[in-house]
Length: 364
Image (cartoon, rainbow, N blue to C red):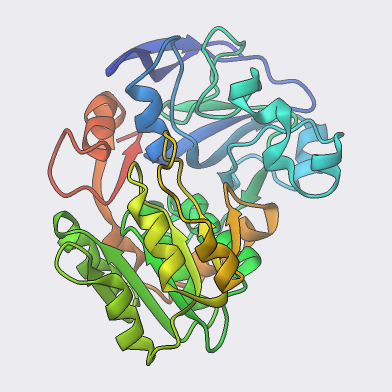
């Protein structure tokens, strides 16, 4: 194809520039996406704060197929004009992990191993358009995408990947269901979607925790269906969960807080004997004075969780398409492409106040 497109390129630490980038030629097995909206993820903010090579960030991408090769159209089951939601992974499709459904763990889609992934690939890798903060994005032959109904509001569609994480962790891995008591540590984007997924999976009691600085998010958690919220700055979490559950404690606990290790420790204590504790956030440092006997004595299952599967994304698409939950209230800020830098600052707590789901709409 001839012509150019506008992209917000992260050029340095906390620096973003709008640049013209040439549109690629589309082969028989690739495509070009016209980006409709992009959700700003914590991963985007993390790269924004430490960027070392220019790249287009943004991987919670929704858009329309603008041009597609015949092989790609048959493989993906889409045509020009179709609306799709993207997964960030570009797996090889051949390794054992890919063949067994764990393509999100494929080394060729891991940026830490020089893999190619949407939202974290340098612009030096041709054709450069591997990020959603752009008017167009290149669809690699191994891209993973899902058709999305046109009636879904854009700001809700941008929640597809976060909500798919929620279904992956709560339903597929955590087995939350009728009668379950679920405790979610952290009322950020991931915590809120875990609350949604847990309730949609039939959990009887969902408890979301947060600090006094997150009061507004705790209030939002209740509006989205959480049964209880606990302000851990003023309430003893173990005592409160015991009170709520009549001493039963939690079947499933997930920690999606960033930084501190205390939520991990308290997660072990609020889990019931033979309960499950999921760890869904990187801490970045070692634990000190960690009492492993809690795990042994309570016969706990501890598991790290990261990302989503094809099935959980399909579950999220169906969930969002149903219109049964007020997902629009999660969107706090929607920015133009030229305001991408502010979008990243706001999502990272350094821009406009009270961010929830922050989005960028490149054609505003």
